Length: 191
Image (cartoon, rainbow, N blue to C red):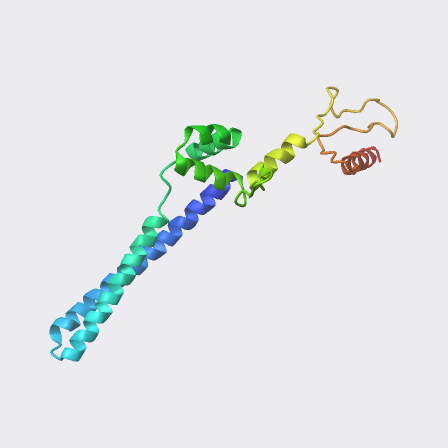
C-alpha cells in the first residue's frame, strides 16, 4: 500500500515537473521574442514596457525553477525511507535521546498531534498522539485469534452440519461482530 502511494506520488511529481519545465521553456521563448522587439524599437515608452515585461517573466521563471527544485525527487529510495520510518515508529525515544535540539523538535511533531500542555500543578499532560501511534496502540490492544490447527476443513465427514463454528482471525472488540460473521460463514457453507 505504501509502495503504491509512493509510486503515485512519484508519477504525480514527474508530471508536475514536466509541466513546469514546459512553462519555463515558453517563458524563455517569450523573453527572446521581447528582446528582439526591444532591439528593433526606438521609442522610450516601448523600451520601458518591454524591459518591465522581461523582468516580470524572469521573476516568474525563477519562481518556477524554485518550485521544480522544491518538488524534485526524494534523495532516498522507498526502501530506505520505509526502513527509517519503521525504526522511528519502533522506538522514537531512542531517536529523542540521541538527537540534537532540531531532531527533538521533529520527534515531538511526529509523535504528538498538538503541542504538549504543561500544568504548574501536575506537570506535563498526556498529549494526543498522531495517527501512526494511534494505529499501533489499536493493534497492540487487539485480540486476534488464529485458525485452529485442524484448519477450516469439516470436523465431521457426513450430514448438512459439516462445518462447525470456525475461529477466524476476526477482531473481537467487545462486540460479537466476528462471531456473527463466523456463524454466517458456517450457515452459508453448510446450506
